[in-house]
Length: 252
Image (tube, rainbow, N blue to C red):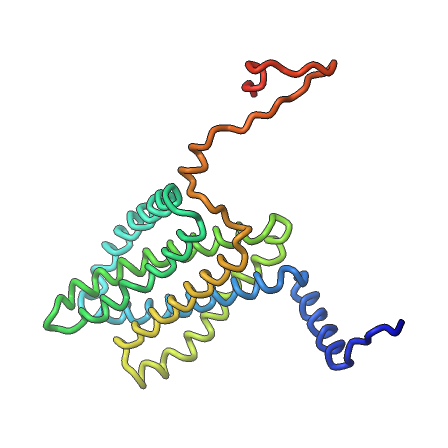
């Protein structure tokens, strides 16, 4: 029987793809997960950096630099509170839903804040709340990135893949630094908040796609349901071939 030969252009693509993966210290089965995580972290980081610059300019114009220490004090409490909130959500919802919901919730308040920047509304208070929400976004984004990566990769895999994933912040620095002056001149600083929210929504969509195609890496039940399940004790045999008693099987 004649063997089917792979077309020459396809062979070249496979070889070039293999060289890129070896240069990045990745294996073929890890590449899709790694690049999707890199895309999520880059998109969300670009949105956060755009938001940071926009909110900083609005905040300094409204309150001045003397109010910044209060923001840093409040941000410490916000970070701790959202850490407890994230753990509480895992008791009631599956992990993949918690990841996607929190990623989407990062963007939703930005659209509401942008609507209230009009001077006739609560503009000053909105800027203050938006500055606090920025600190919360930092915490949520880092938690989502680390938890999703830990679920998608084993310990050996994450040693190779996470340096590439975390380099998304470097790509975001370059992209946001080059694009922000142009966006500011074209659409204005206030409207950049809309784009920042859109970038965060894009990151949430990538997380939704990841949690759907790699469902096997995420537990289906909530932590509360898992902890309420009775332990599955199996009959263990001791030396000599006799089955252990019921009381001994429950001991550790």
